[in-house]
Length: 595
Ligand code: AGP
Image 1 (cartoon, protein in one colour):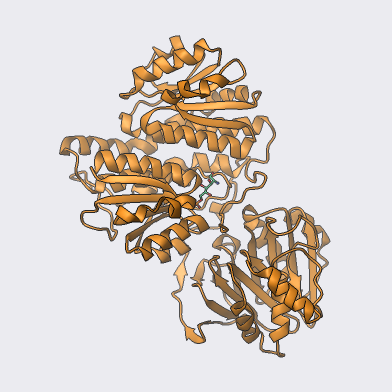
Image 2 (image 1 turned 180 degrees about the horizontal axis):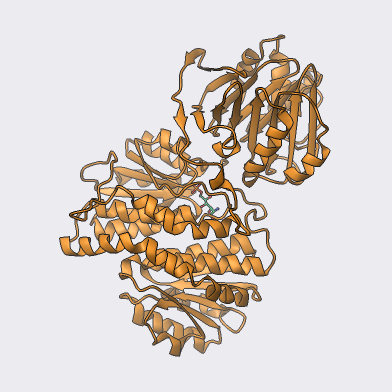
């Protein structure tokens, strides 16, 4: 996945592009480049971060240009493979996010026509195709003809030497236009333009758009279309680190606020009840929750909550496995959980669900994202912008959205429902209290950093939290971590226990507690160091575990929310102690827009 940006207006283009690319680095950061246009094009590229690029960019007077920050998919990380890519005469430059599946055949045909290629990328066919169709001053038309040849996904921005406009097009990759005063922007996402404007237009699949300093013209299938102007509810400050060493830590600390926002206006005050303003089937027989990565872990929690609280059959399905599992055969409501709203696997699963006639709901953080436009309705989790590649506050917000969804069906007894809702409202305060104990948890993270393997174990509703702990640990600290339902250890993973395999055990006082105690005794007997995460007031586990982390005691069903913070902080401090690049882990990007 990559980040792309375009600018045209009254400012010098280079500083704007470099600043915006910096904001998009979380989408890809192995190499980057910009092209600015006056009478001729000037292209500068670098391997590495935007800061390396900024050292190479010579001062110029251009007020229009495009930029790209790359996460390599086709071709190694080299300057030649970095974008922008240009045509043979160096008159047209293109930045692209997505994958062109038929690029080999297109490239062969273009080479036969005499086009010379200098990179290994799929993208390079684009400037050559556009060159083939280009007639002076008619860039939009050439882009339209070029994209007709493509199989695959693309969000592109094109600039030509001497031109007074940018041309952008999208299919299955996000692209947004930012509207300024005598200036306009195009980018993969709004974070690139929040320093300049909060008025945006989200492009739809098939849109081709010409952007000048004063206007924006959008066409789809040859017809002029208008798209709604929206105001982004996020500020530029929200996408800064605000004094924290890493975005991840800042975002972990923003979780009390994120949960308050997720709950806001969704719980009635006098008679506690959850009301969600969403279009939903009245009595769904079978619900499928589909998602990837952390969002899938939220889906697993959702599965359990919908089953227990809403008394409806629900199952979580990994989005990339959706077609194999064919859950639409017996489901009538498919809920796609995706913080970005752009994850290709989740979008593909959602399209399959729609095609099968299921009602669809997107549980999303990013306004205007593709999932919100694809589904019948959207439940926004309102976590605010999340920059770190590791999902933290968006995960918590998704989990809270699962409680709201399950409770909104109102099928458990009234007293139990009221108690749960009342305690849910207190979660932001509990989270703040837990975050005050960060330094204790940090010590356990620092201790775990010396190991090369870690197990996370739990039972019941906390098993997805164990999965989340293992995912976070792998993702940001590069330590091998696995999660197991505690009862499964004896069926195989026991073989790996011993002094070099520490175990983090999530053991709230719920109906699984005594079984967890037995599991932990068995783990200890095999020599593994055990860190138990338990309720405040629980002194029994101190007899069993080597170390104990205490979290505010809440109703057992709500314990995943608090335990999540513990595993997030543990993984953060393992990564910090090991000196890892926490916000930008190797080989990963924030939003995965390829299948
Ligand atoms: C989480 O830390 C990961 N970065 C990743 O697993 C992520 O949750 C997954 O790619 C799904 O993303 P989405 O929520 O934007 O769809």
